[in-house]
Image 1 (cartoon, one colour):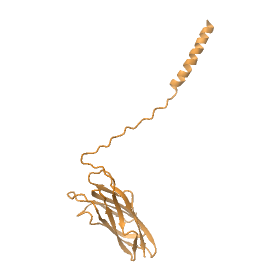
Image 2 (cartoon, helix red, strand yellow):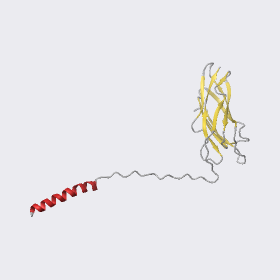
Image 3 (tube, rainbow, N blue to C red):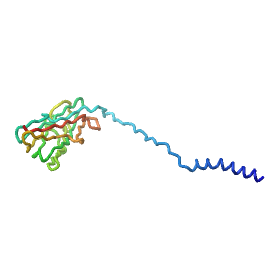
Image 4 (tube, rainbow, N blue to C red):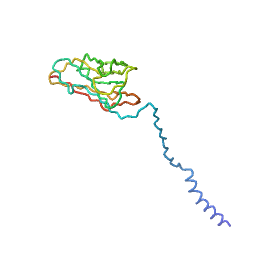
Amino acid sequence: MSKKITLLIGLLLLIAIPIGISFFSEKPKPAEKTPSIPQVVSPTEKIVNAQTSLAFFPSPYAISSSSGSLAVAIDTGENEVTAVQLEITYDPKVLQNVAITPGTFFENPLQLLKNVNSTKGKITYAFGAAPTAKAKIGSGTVATITFTTNLKPGEKTDITFSPETLVTAEGVRVTVLKEALGTTIERQ
């Protein structure tokens, strides 16, 4: 009888050990899926493609004196633009007395923010259509930048839009800015 009990205990151990190992070992958890959040669009909100572009004009810009001015041009495509936030960078050692004023694209634009940091070489200028005005479609000048420079003939400097630049459009929650093109200023 002792052989039968030993054999039975051995058989039970052969069955129990793999079950115990599989039970107590960590099992990889199945990858949790993040539930997708459906995009909720209000009845007045539009889903549109970003079609608006900003660019400095003229580009490139050749100047023959120690001062100049650049236009910031806009082309909205079919976007109905309500406001623009320009974030512009330049070399403050090369461009001085930098100022920015609204262009003619928005009639009586509402100025939201205006900061010219001559130490860092950064312009932040946000403005848009007055609350009672209609959104704008088309092209024109949204702002004008004036400056003096210490460039010597043949020297160049860049002025660019930073990634924080954005354009808002009626009924759209995200920027409709497709591209923003900087330019080079060269002293003749």
